[in-house]
Amino acid sequence: MKKVITTTALLLLFAFVTSNAAVHVFQPNPVDAYDLDHYRAYTWGIDWDFGDEEISSVTLKFDNIRNWTNEENSLFIHMLNDVPAGLAVYPDSDPTINDYFNGQGLLIDEWSDTDPTYTSIDLTYNFGDLGILPQFIDYASNNNFGFAFDPDCHYWNDGISLTVVTDAPEPATLFLLTFGLAGGYLLNRKKQ
Image (cartoon, rainbow, N blue to C red; front, top):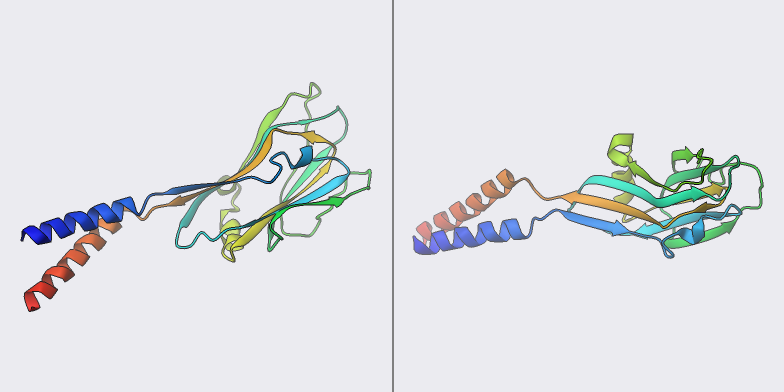
């Protein structure tokens, strides 16, 4: 009986230790995407296998983003499926406000900096709140996903990040699994 208790305790400990939630943070290189220059368009691809992890939360954030001058401006932000890994830069010589990635992937936002004082803000997109978490999970299921940015102005920033939180299995499920394994062990020992 002592061995059964020890085995059950070890199984419980193993289950709780190996089932922690994970937080994955991704950033392009360079983290500010060259300060999102007006005459460029950008794709940022990420190769990542979440394995059996269940994605519960996704947040895309632009730290201290601000327009360089008070003028008409837009930042088009798209979520893409199947984009080459890393940060890619494309020339965009169109001086008008026009979405370089129109029709590609999912348009998350067309953001405009309307503050005439050029005050920087943290621009944050919570995919659950936006209702696009299922689409992100679908895109990430092939182990490659990414974003496209078309800054139709110059947007200084201190970094872009994507935070993906994955859930651990529920404690009740782990508890039942552990005791099921312990019960199987007991039955096997009894048969022997």
